[in-house]
Each structure stands twice: as structure tokens, then as C-alpha cells.
Image 1: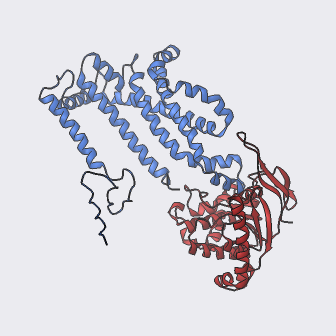
Image 2: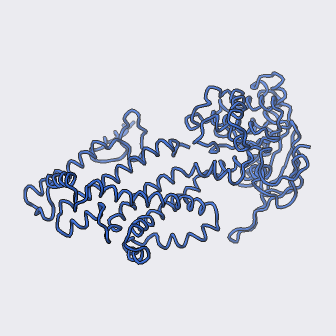
Image 3: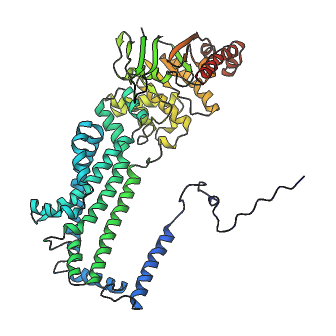
Length: 285
Length: 262
């Protein structure tokens, strides 16, 4: 009788199987685990490298001012404003443009997307224009917006509106497919009308996708903000960044970028919170 | 009266150059009031097509389906369906799922919750009325689905393998529960299953279907559910000599169909 060869112990550094589970985890779920500490360390690391690169003189302050300088600039603008306009007003104006356009895009895009999902007639009519303009960068049709709507508020809001509309409408359209055919058939077999199925089955089951589409859409909105404020703006975060860049006030540019990112991130957190409250059943059935 | 299917055939038109598929050929079936009709057969024999036909999700290519003498045109609350799974609405809690059909009929909330509560108690779900459906076990979800169909007060209850996803123990309990409810509500039932034992135990009429084309190959009248309702324990019924003899006979029919297909 020959002894069976002993199984070789897995060498450290080779990943033959998934890590053993901790209590409360399921074996083999891809990417599970808490990342908060690592994320905080990552942010701290970036700031540290940034600080080192500037303090040790690797990069000239003209190209990259240090974290301290950006912070001082933030406090300065916070107290004294930028180009004679209070800082909070810049924020308020930009937020009004982005959220106004976002609201408008949701009011039009969500019903339009749902209608496209439900009706071949509406889909046939609106699919070509939306798919045609969707991949065009907003900067490319910015001149058109200005020719058509002037250099006032309308063209700025329209530009952001268009960049949000397509993802929101397409998300709502895809959401229509979320309801299982059994759910739809069950409703019909309890005597539902077509409208009741739409209202009580298809719309609620599309909600998770609609909320995701709104998160993606508002992201596009913030991306388009600076482009929208390129022409004839005298207020707004995008205007602040652009005009500071013309005077090589790099610290104001970086500060503005961080403020835009922070507002967008805060709103995304709010949307995730709403998602958990409104569709706690997402992915559960 | 009741539900009458007359010479109903379903032919799916040809797709991509493949020949048309004859899903059902000349089905004749009567489901009288108080009948519990069970459909059994190898996969692909058209059981689910037949249920869709009765429910109104499909129209027959020829023949007709009459409910109390009126042709069936599309789905309606007189023929509520219980699906195998995936049919509950996760954004509603248990009682609102059960009251869903009543809500569609415009019945006010207090009234429809009263009716729903009655059926929840009947199915032993009384204390779960505020629970989220996705937190329930599979067996409880299925009972919610049955309660929901019953609240619509249908003439015919259509059940498409309602117990297929349940474990063996829960399944036997659910069989007895459905029989008791059928007995107390006097609904007619059309019930699809893959399990021969379940079919024999539950039905008053059994149709054994054969594939290609889907048709009713054999019909049996069954005494076993009445024995159970008269007080004989379920396992005693299922272990009786007649039950086992019929079970083997039906199994043989189905196996020979499966072999003919393979």
C-alpha cells in the first residue's frame, strides 16, 4: 500500500481559492469586504505625495501649489469672495444651473423613457434623435446652443439639460424591462388594465434603474457645468475655475475643482441614501 | 357550465425557417365547478401552454375556450393565476400583495385589508401581514401567492407548478393546505405539476399529456383527495395499494413518452 502523496500546502502568494470567510460573509462572493479604511488611507496618501512634491520643490507652485496654499485660497475666497461676488453665490448659481437642468431632464426624460419602453410608436420616433446626439460631447454643440438661445442663462441650462436627458431617458427605458413577465401576467390575471399594470407593476419595478440613471445623469450634469459656464458667465464655479486659469491662479483652479467634486459626491451620497430608503428591495427578488 | 375547452389547438408560427411548432392539438377539456383538474406530463407536452390558454395569455389558433358559455378573450379576475415563483411584488408588504387584486378593482383600503386578512389567516400567515415578502421563506412566499389569487374570488384558480420550488416537507404540508382551501371555498382548480404523487393525491380528474404535438393522452378520475378530505391521513392515502398501483401506471406512461422524445 503506497501512501497517498500529501497535498502540497498552498504557497503564500498563490491564490488558488478564495480567502476563507469571516463571520457574516459568504464564501466566494467577488470583491466583498470593507474598504473604508483603505479609502481613507488612499486619500491621505494622495495628499501626502502632493504635499511632498510641493514642499520638496519637485514641482513649481505655478503648476501645482501645495495643499496648504489651496486651503488658504479656499479660506480667502470664502471670506472675500471671487471677482467681487461672494463664494456662496458662485456655488448657489452653479447649483441652480445643474439642479435646475437636472430637474427638468428628469421631468421630461423619465416619462419619455418609460413611454419609449412601453410603446413601439414613441420608441420609433425618439430613439434616432436621442441615440444620435447622445455620444456628441457637449462642447461640440455648445456653439449651437449659443446661436439658438443666446449667451444668457437659457443656453447654459439647455447644455446641461441635454447632457443629463439622454442617460436619464435611456435608464428609464431600460427599467421598463425590469418587471418579470410573471408579475405582469399575475396582475392581468387579477383583472388589471394596461394602465394599472404600468402604474402598479412596471413603474415600481423600474424605480431602481431610474434612480441609478438619475445618479449617472447628475454626474453628466456636473461634467458639463464648466463647459456651460465658458461663455459670458460672470458667476459660478465653472466661471471661477476658467477665469482663475487665465490669470494662472492655479490654487483657485484646484480649489474650485475640489469644491465641484465635493458637492457632486455629497449629492451622490444623498441619492444612495434615497435609494436605500425608496427601493430597499433592489436586487432582493 | 364551468370552463369548457373545445377542440383548442395552438400552433406557433415558423421562426427563422424552422417549421411551425404544434404546441397543442385539439384539446377537449371540461372543468366543472368543484373540479380539481391536474395536468401531468413530460416537459414540453404543452401543460403550461394549456394554462396560458385558459388564463387568456394566449389565443387558440383554432377551437374555443368558454367560461360559463362566454368565450375567453384575454386574462381576467375570474381566472386568477398562481405562478411557480417571481410573481410577488417586492415593494409591497405581505398584506398589500394579498390585497393587490382588490386594489386593482378599486376596493377601499380598509375593506380590502379585511378580506386579505381573512385569507392570510386561512393560509397561516396572520402574523406576517406587515412583513416584507423578500424576507419570507419560499414556502411562505408561495402561500402569499395563493392567498393573493384567492382574494380575487376567481371562478377557476390556475396553478402553474405552485409547489415546484418547495422542499419535500413543506410541499406535502402545502398540498394538504391547498386541498383544504379548495374544499372550503368550492373553487374549480387547474393545477400543473411534475410530481406524479402530487397529481394523484390532489386531483379529482387527472389528464396526462404527451408531447409533439401536445395532447391529452390519458384521463383518469381520482378518488384520493376525497379520501383525504374525509379524514384519512395523507400518508395513509399515499401508501394505499390503489394509489401505488396507479402511480406506477402513470409513471410508465410518462417514462415511455420521455423515451420516445429522447
